Length: 253
Image (cartoon, rainbow, N blue to C red; front, side):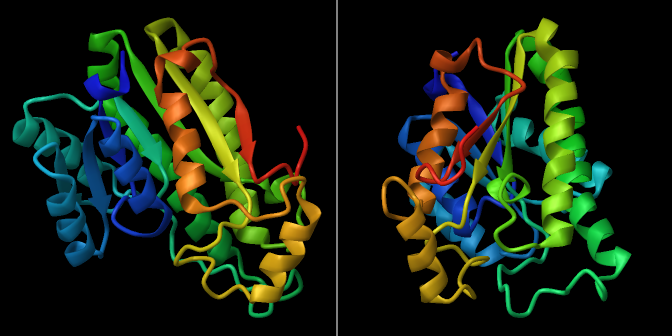
């Protein structure tokens, strides 16, 4: 299925990296369901910007019933089923190495919060959209990960552990859903220059990371969003259960 034929749910799609992903899929002609939790004004403005094939819908990704309702409402509003999901929503996190909790003080509640957002959130969206994907014999799931579990240059313990678990779910889901024509992959970025979550990062850190990449720069949100398009497109139809790192070459493999 061409991107222009798809309806894509982007969780956390109203701002930051999510807004770049929403714009990228809309630019390619896809319908986009912009999920948001609290960013109602940003979501409404983005939907208006993207035009009639965009709809903004509120739901907390950690609430399975809310996500089921979002999927039903999206089909009622658009007349189309969601065939593709980008699990981008990030639960209350800032990339600020100086302020991060250290291993000797971090509370398990922070891990639970990140696991709920990353793993439970992805499970909820996959379960809600699976019936329509199976009916179509087609589906694309793209989970947003991180290169930090390969290269923990800054040890964000809670965030990194949750994304590592999400990679495990990505691979088991790929195996389970492959016979239905559904691919499940992860895109793992490095530090992006710049999103809401990375705005607390000092410029010196960006510059240091850029100096260590083969491209001598830090990936932008727009560049990451373009990589999402690749995994939604027909060109990736034989790619599933994979973790593609998009960080200007900093981490290999």
